[in-house]
Length: 225
Image (cartoon, rainbow, N blue to C red; front, side, top):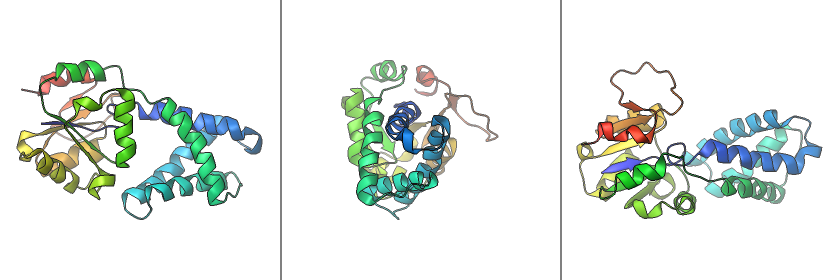
């Protein structure tokens, strides 16, 4: 069984996020005393903080959307009610969703793997992650979709990999996992016994020994029997 991460592996998350933040910035530019690049970095920093709270079970998916938006605008000296924060998040979400797209190497890779059992293991809200696959036109390729929102546990906790293997009805040594984050995807899955393949699109440096690494999904076959 070949499992894939979703955001940053199949979906160009950072590009979609950038356009979502840009949409939000342009709509509120007159009230923000900062340029677009500063606002984008602020959004990324605050979002990371509150999304982790969601993954850790401290906030619901809906709550983290409101809290991160309030947090971003608070840094800009603007206090938002929950209602206003939700409205502004919807502006971001519209731009974000409009730019969901697969990396260029995804569709060829999936067709090359036709006949193989494929699955998804992803952090995030289950409904939104499935919607991403549907919007990219690749939902049909995946037999199993395991998300932290559905499983109740998030990577790097190895239990999410255990749940995925149980759903597949396979031991970990008969599975592999392709992901873009060495420390959240690859090292944890290997700790559980799954073969990890790091999709290092941007050739990030590392000092971990014996890492299976590719820079494109076009090279995935080199690690598959």
